[in-house]
Image 1: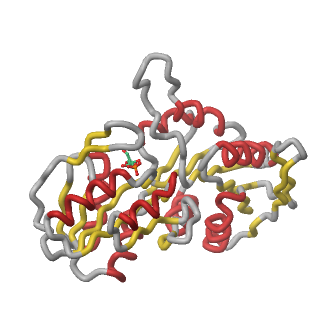
Image 2: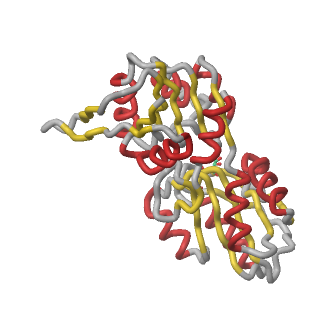
Amino acid sequence: MKVISTEYSQILGARISQRLGVSLVDVKFSKFPDGELYLRTGPLDEEMVIVGSVTGSDALVQLLLLIDACSESDNRLVIPYMGYARQDKQFQPGEPLSARAIARTVAHHVRGIYTVNIHDENVLRHFGIPTTNSSLGNDVADYLKSEFKDPIILAPDDGARYFAEQIAGSGNWEFDQLEKTRISGESVRMDKKDLRTKGRDVVIVDDIISTGGTIAAAAGMLYEQGAKSVHAACVHGVFTGGAYTHLAAAGLKSVICSDTIERACSHVSAAGIVSKALSEC
Ligand code: R5P
């Protein structure tokens, strides 16, 4: 078995190969003069683990090219961050189910898919082949244990509840949940709620930070209620449109994510849970 990754998941790919104790395939990535993507792999194995987050259009195309280059092998595909997973319903007539479109597109020449905290597990059925979704809750909790003594863990909405409860449970910390209503892609409304956060360190946890709107709205309310410090932890640090700066300006004392999207603040690695899932099935 060997591991191969796109440019967008090269650190995580290397970590997974180290964890599994198998070779990493060297890949040359470049572009044709017209901007089309090109890649050329080193020698492959009969059994391959392909790693590539779908962080955008180029990442998706590069992943498709990599899967095709590996098409003679017995492949398993790791999609650490599956972009487009949030468009998993037809909210308005004429819209695509983008999550289904992506799932169907990448599921060729692979016999199993591995994801990390996919936005909604219902999306997994669209792959049409066996899938395993793992949660980084315990790993995020381990990181928080090294940083905080007795934080309160907050989920910004119902969707983040399971993840936040997993983290709070692992650290034996207090947990609460906010009520968020999404107004548009960029703006959210956070309903007022009395929280016992006065004088406390608060960590808001979510699967994705995209524009940062959710976390910034929550942080504002928490500071109004006397929180000592507000921090954020997520799995997938998308940080679009200057979101990290937006959060720092909103008073967040720290913001961390995992290496499903490789960032300077990727303090948690998905290599452990992904390698475990690959070893088990
Ligand atoms: C949405 O349901 C997700 O779990 C996140 O809460 C959302 O993607 C965060 O987006 P933003 O950072 O743009 O508020």
